[in-house]
Amino acid sequence: MNELVAGQNAPAGEHALKFSVTATGFDVDVIGLVVDDRLQVSDSDDVVFFNQPTTPGVTLSDGQLSIDLDALRPGARVLCAVGFDDVPGELAMSGMRAELTGSVGSSRFGLSLRPNLGETALLCFELYQRSGQWKVRALGQGYLGGLAQLLTSHGVEVDETPGTAPASHDLPPEMTPLGTDYGAAIERAHVIFEDAARSAAGFVQSERFAHDRLDRELADTLSDASQRNSPEVARRREAAQKRCDDLVTAARERFDSDSRVLMDELAALDPQLPPAMASWQSPAWSRAGGHTGSGLRLADLSAPERGELRLPYCVPTPVPRPLWVLETGQSVVAVVTSLTVRLVTAARTFSAVSGDGVTIDILDLTGKLTALTDLLAPLLLAPPVTTPDAVAPRLTVLESAIDLNMMALQAGPDDRGSDDAFGVRVVVIADLPFGWEHADLARLLRIVDRGIRLGWSFVFAGSLDDHDGDPLVAAIADSTLVLPVTDHALAHDPWVGLEWTLTAEELDPQSVAAQQIVASLRSGQSPSNAGPHT
Image 1 (cartoon, rainbow, N blue to C red):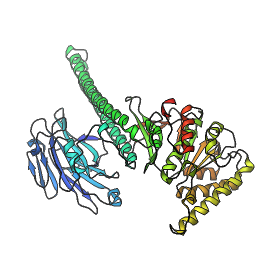
Image 2 (cartoon, one colour):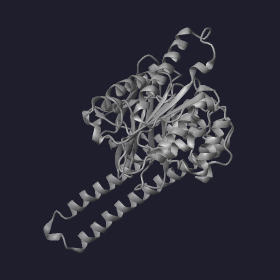
Image 3 (cartoon, one colour):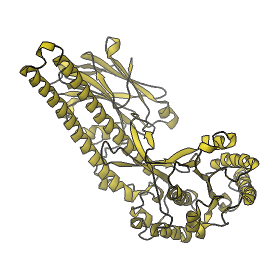
Image 4 (cartoon, rainbow, N blue to C red):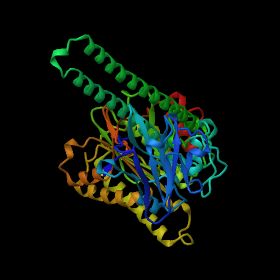
């Protein structure tokens, strides 16, 4: 069995194949579409499903598709898909498995499917022809609108497919507002990231295939030493190079087109996002609050060698792990400022309280975050900790706050009193463990573990190299999501494993935008025209 990942392709090997999908705990329906090179059907007869079990080249029987590539019309390709009803999250997360099998091992392909964003239809495989050879490409593309959306996306006119939601008809970005469902924002950002990753993988695979084929053709051309300098060999070399260039150019054009669509979608999405997820230039920062869900924008992801597309790297809130802004020679103040302001904004959304309902603690024994402290002064209920002798008393305050929250939670909704007992805290610590006693580090480790469970946020800033041998610092660092501040930070997407350059979000604490946002947090109102001044 050849295990494929989304975006990967391989020779099909055989012209008679069977497609099936297995799932644990729920039923699935397999579907086949015969499409052209634009992935569009010619009419509804090109769709194979339980009510229409056959079309030339594809037949549905006993829950699986039988595909005869030789029986397809010229120029056609086949999309293998699966649909299912809404299922509990734990069942969906357990995954499904799609298989495309022939009679020999080299023609057996597997793809793991995990509809973890609520999709109820998935494209699994594409069978297509290149240079006279049939190939299989793993897809894994999901559709939140179910089979209706999947079919509509490929040219099928449907009113409503049984067992699925009505089609969304793939409206342009400006016509698909989030409305008040801000909980969907983090999902939408991930869907765009996945689309970008799969598009990039297709381009990279095509480019690699083109150059591998060129190498093989040049090797064959030059295999006869006596003919290496002949006009015929020169002609063949030029033809091989042209085939390579044409394939790369076509792949680049498709990829650039996909990227433009995604950039347009991101531009339309940005004003609709909750502020903590939006860019600093977004009008979201001048919009009234009251959102019902949120996420946190940590960084931008890009691949300069592939194009200009920049994607927001967002995580749900409350963030389930502390954040460590890793200093590698560049200043971390602007990154810590961005995270802190976004965390406070998201915490106001999460706790449904005013700006004063979020308590900010800053422990900065080196003075590195003085500019941030000055910016947040209107929001601080207690002065920042700037000397070693003030660390232990502040930790006592944090421990007491955790104990009060825990007791209030155990008391239940009828006896816990005011919601103010459930204050959310954002704790910012610079240059750990400089100036910290060993006993205080142990207390901090326990505070982090308990505070995260209450929805608290922790931001650490500094380097780690000098303290790798300290087991307590190592234990704290191991629990964090590390955000390096460098021009060379790389991340790998979870779908196809491509490299992306990770650039941490920054906000100058002395900028007009930062000051306006903090003023709005203090008053509980939205900042006015804050974004464009960064």
